[in-house]
Length: 334
Length: 292
Image 1 (cartoon, rainbow over the protein chains, first blue to last red):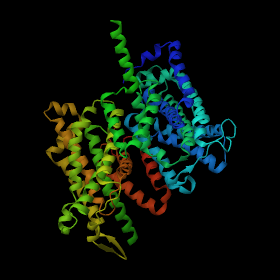
Image 2: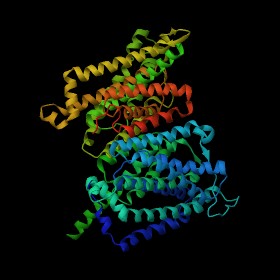
Image 3: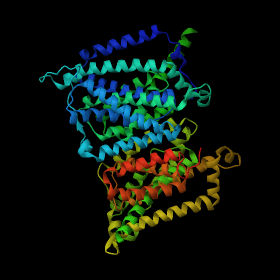
Image 4: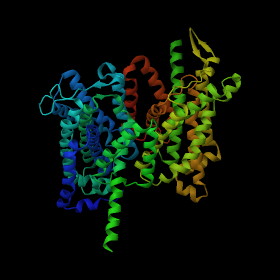
């Protein structure tokens, strides 16, 4: 638990720009190059990437494995659905605001309880609390729609009414795709600032050596609580972005195997890297979509991938790519 | 008054099954310090195997023979456990627990689909065993005799396990390994063998729970995932790694659930999870857990 991503800290801003700009350009022009289905799929992936980015602030940077992040994703999604059903809101900005408020409230409450623990107890407690929300969504069907879920129509972006004639697919693949992309870029930038701030460094110090961190005056529980809060809110925002794409929210996204999928994504990309969760979420989304289309036994397929992954590539895709890159550079230098 | 007896029987019925599942989970954690997320699937496997043995393969046999077939599910789960521990789980004991949870989560996904592949998406029942035993009268109510058998099996399993762990040489070795694996190993205990045995017993208990519950319900996909979260509540309340804790936790959950179903059905599950959260807050290691 001590391999600090030093390469990340040393990287110059210029190098980051050299990486980020081409990727951003590709993401920007993509809806005009591929068919709508692909860009909608990518929008799903980007929304999940925000959730996993938030999740990884706890796992990768604070050393706490949450097995209950479905709760905050679900809170974001249900906040939007309730705003549609009971307040007749249509504006996406209000949806995001509502999801942020709701997830701040829920994560503050859950976080207050959970950050007293670490290791397996933290995982089980987050899981138990997320299941409270699941059972409420499941049982109070006259409020939440039960297993039928709640429908969420296409929202208004930036106050602009989507013309009645506009095809929903076209809307999701273009206007909404760009909306998700912008929120995604903002979230990535924000998370980058957070993990490279003194606060982020303090979290890593807590992860690597709790006793020492306490010795140099870090208030461990408070830092963990704030990390929990930020983590949950990112995941809540992801839930709010996800629900118009899906058009429907059901208790499935609150059920604990969905939390397992979030952990899966982080490990797939590599939770020791900043970019790992992003890559993991996007790749997982493609894998799952194609596995579901390919076989009814997609779950077993994903399970085998997960088992092989933890056995053979514990640093995930990004970690392995970095190792290979370093190896290639060494060979090249000789 | 009689209705109270019925409610008590229902609570005990539920507690028996939960004790078997959660006791197995807790035993495995106590010895190997690993939380097996696929434990619920072994419970489901027990249910499916017994259901098809009783309801399909030997459906025409005499009823006495069918009752003898009841433990087949438990044996199947135990056999699977004996294979899984050395092959899949052993490499992970030295790795951080996120990897342990992930590999068992992967196993959960695989086993879920294995059940779907072998038995298909439809529920499977073994209700002949349930129906043949008929009902007993409790005052003015009737109560299925089969449920009483399940309670008896649960109680017997609890006594048997207690004797196994506290009154046999095997139990001494098991407890020694659980308390200090390195020292036990230095004293000549074959730790790998103990690990297989403990994991097999844990899986046997889960499979037995599935086997005895299937005649009164039926085997459905997803039952494992549901059972796992409930047994999490049990082990959190009782203390992870403690069999006494699993027993008390199962009784508490059984009673609360029975009250919940009749008094506050909407928030019955939520109350159970909240109890688990409150216990963790007040006593982090659970009611019977050792502080680690």
